[in-house]
Amino acid sequence: MESKFVPEKGFPFYSVSSGAIKNQSALKILSTLFQLFQGILWSIRFLLKEKPQLTVGVGGYVSFPICFASFLLRIPIFLQEQNASVGISNRILGKLATRIFLGFEQAKSAFNPKKCVVSGNPLREVFFGPEVKAYQPEKNHLLVLGGSQGARAINDALMELSGEILKSFPGITLTHQTGVSDEKKVATFYQQIAPGRFQVKPFISNMVEAYNEASLVICRSGALTVSELIQVGRPALFIPYPRKGQNDQTANARFLESSGAARVVEQGPDFKARLWEALQACFTPPVLKEMALKTSRLRSPSGLATIGDQIVNALS
Image (cartoon, rainbow, N blue to C red; front, side, top):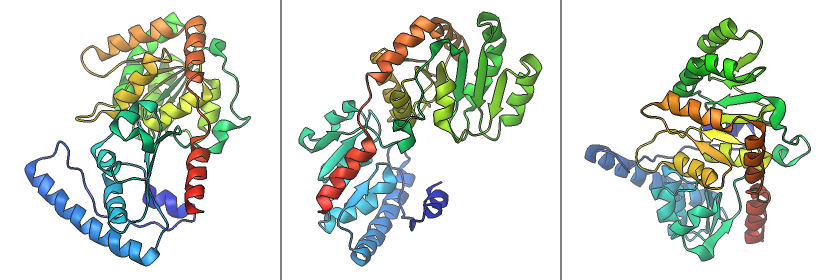
């Protein structure tokens, strides 16, 4: 994705060799170690050529070679940890970093607290402007998001529950981001049972507008989605992406749930029944209003501005 979008914004893009180690086979680990060695050598040559004043790493194994090479060359490292839980790459790099910017305070336990700044995650400026409207729980509108690529488990569950949703919540409307692969199937199904009331989109580009219309958001719990919901003050029903090892989405979702700002339904046995139970429990204006209020209390100043200011100060 980055190889397409970064050049479109006018920035040079370079790829670096890397790979995952955690929860991999012995053969895969050996292959990855060779990739990492190649990536570190490439990064050293790249840094010696470009001579940057500092390096910013945003986590994940792809950031390890360039950040580790920066440490070897004594170039200051600034890390950004987006999630409430911390992966192995940032746990290692955190020991080498000058400053660590956290999306959620819960991640501080993985690092030296003296290096940490709870900045919140960087979001586009539109999320801090007048485009964000006041929350209206009585809109009776569900926004369903499965990520830009869709989420088949969410798509299928909503189709199966749609009849009950129509019976239990008269006048309800719905916008469903399905991803490209499921768009036609879901749109055809909704057109048969709720023509004109259930809108299907493969991808939503104007997320602020979509959030403005939502009484409740049903979605995955990636770090930026959670941060966007906090900033716009919308309640959520989270369905974390099931992942082996470090399940960052579950940690993000449970953080909001512990604050009373969201409900969490994990995939697994009886997923559809548990999702329906959670939806029934929270989709009333008084409950939604209370959840939205608690979500809003988690807001922080612009993470983008905080991180940018500190980097500019370091450069000067």
